[in-house]
Image (tube, rainbow, N blue to C red; front, side, top):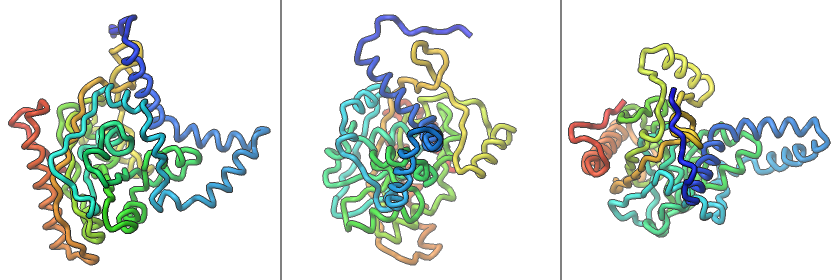
Length: 335
């Protein structure tokens, strides 16, 4: 394979962008297992007390992720996240007002490989979410598994990430009568296996848990579509029915996380690596769907609201797709 090397004279700002995205990719792919290894490794060294003291702290602080987490605003507002935003670049697009007197459950589609758009828009302060939607505080959901990793749990909580199970996701909605936006990548880990460039498969047809939570909490629903999310990585062909897809789905069922075999570009060359491509991501926030509080919704009520949500997401996609390079004859495929 012929390598396409990066030019020697790259502007400083582009080098900074690459460095920040490299750190972000590393934190997603390797930081959690490294933190687990470090925790146990220190126990067998002269620094064993570090792990022991952390274990005590962990025991005391164990429920914090399920109680709204612990966002560090200073870290979320660091200038370095602007470099990550500009790498792709990522842009947040507002289509309607969100009244801070209400709470919201925001469905993010599609998941993509590493949810670059969701992180840039709703975890850190690089794209202006707080300015566009004043009075709203966003909480991004993540698999509960990651909040059981020592050290790593504290790292991800700094960005406002909270567990995606019912207890963790509903707590911020119960805490305040308004001003809370819980953001969930509805397709989750399984949808990452469909994150191929040029595809618009949305794992939503049977996903009703977030709809039920919105009804139980009286939180309005907001569909979000992130154009370009599937374009920043290539993925090895894993069509449904192939042995690779079968293996990935089996491992996902066992471990709770998916293992997409993705690749894109490198740091010093553009031919192969795990760095995402520099392709624009436009995250379009749709209009809110009013939801009345209903602690015990019937299956008919749940199905009706779920269908309304799918219709609104489809309308959002159809209205904006041609603005972001999607052909007119391409439509969402609900799986």
